[in-house]
Image (cartoon, rainbow, N blue to C red; front, side):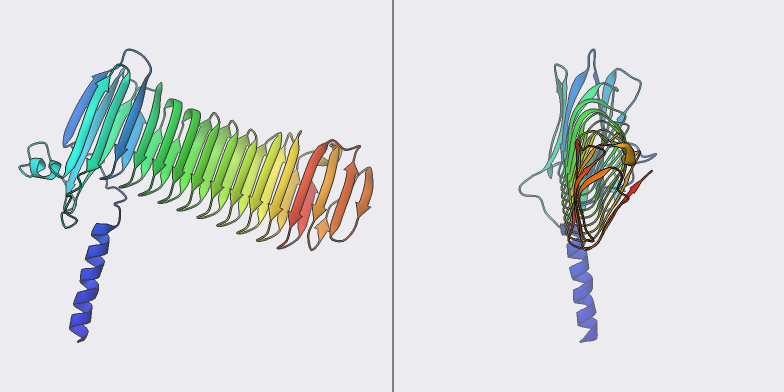
Amino acid sequence: MKTLKKFKLIGLSLLMSLLLPSYGFSQENKTPSLTKTFVMDQPGTLNASSSGGGVVVESHNQKNVVVQAFVRKNGRILSPSDPSLKEVLEDFEVAIEKSGSVVTANVKRKGNFNIWNNVGISLTILVPWEMSCNVSSSGGGVRISGVSGTHSFSSSGGGVHLENVSGTTKAKSSGGPVKAVNQNGDVQLSSSGGGVSVEGAHGNVVAHSSGGGVHLTDIQGDVDAGSSGGGVSVSGESASVKATSSGGSVKVNIGKLSRELYLQSSGGGIEAVIQNGNKLGLDLDLRADRVNIDLHDFSGTSEKNRVNGTMNGGGIRAYMHASGGSVNVRWE
């Protein structure tokens, strides 16, 4: 009986590994199964999608787009001369083409795909720096680096990782975390499969997660951040910051505040460090189990759990409400 149960568990594990989306596989130093190259004489647009694996887009210093398809079978990348390559490709619809300045690279599993065939196709695409990118994957993660333009990225099979991306950017994931490093331009990030993080951004940031925390560091722009799956933290220089959490605490450390600070938490306390805040004109609305703040030139009501009034004549709205802890405000 124990042997039978063990066999069933092994069979179930194997089945789940085949049914669950692949998070991609290493392609470094591997020969692509298929390669197509398109010459670009002007900034263009890339439309790429895959339901068979992850998608990687990287910039290079060439005026062309190189699409590399890595076909996997049983954990092995097939070479262009592999006799089983044609058989695997019959399970997919592969369209790699160029029309004007638009390059399309789409990989889609066919409707009659056999789940028992351990196969997949991942894409690595090399593009000029000036390339607007629309990239999606339902079979793995999405990784983008070094592109400039107007972008849209999504994944339901893994996370989304952006690095050195310039321009207006939208990215979302229901299969993992979303992370942006050294973002230049306005960005909107969301995830229901993990947290959201930004490390360095010059532009306005909108970041929301229902699958984890939201952590934004070194932000040079306005912020709208929220999480129902964890805490929220923001640091940088922002004229306006909105940060809310129902899954944890809210922590901010900001300079150059000039319009609004809106902080709310129902899952923890609020910690706010405001650079030169004691010299700012603030309209204070603070509520929590306990409010801790060093008031200067204050007019209004100050109680243990509530502060309402103006500091230095008022002007900038400072709203901080916590129903799960204290509100602590410090000036630096």
